[in-house]
Length: 232
Image (cartoon, rainbow, N blue to C red; front, side, top):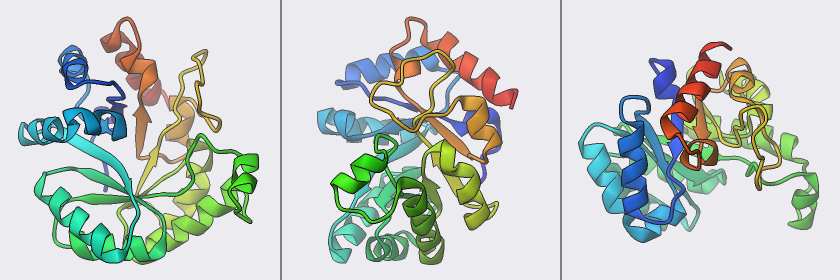
């Protein structure tokens, strides 16, 4: 999945508690941003209907649900998400779940993204949950599995994007959260990269939430990130 412009490569995370606040953010960003991510926080506050509304008007929506369940349940969930008109959907990068999702989405325009390792996790976090791999190694292993499963792209830290791109080739999406402009607060993110470096590393799309949504001037914040992406 290849984006056609820098604007289409910026995905703004609508990480706000209410649809009203999300609507306000979209109004403020109109003409600057054309792609939004909706995750758990907003989804469980009426955000799924809002996602359908935006998609029906031509806005691209990345539905960040990180699905993981038995094959049948994943497949049925994906089938309904296809009907919603979403552009992207996340699946945890477990081979059976990915294969079930790919089969369910076949013939549609939905780009399925494999979640490799959350950008809030570092090596100690991986040890704590029992993984034998460090984050970088597990990201690469899961990228190979996603490629073989027929997924549309990978979600990973931009710090790993260059290595992932070498594995998946030029056509798969490499979507990178944990993007922070120079001088911004990292929050709970641990493996962060600037917008320009993410583009240079091979990211196809950048997901930016708080640095834009929590800014006093959202349009200016989004425009500054787009300008930095163009400079890469």
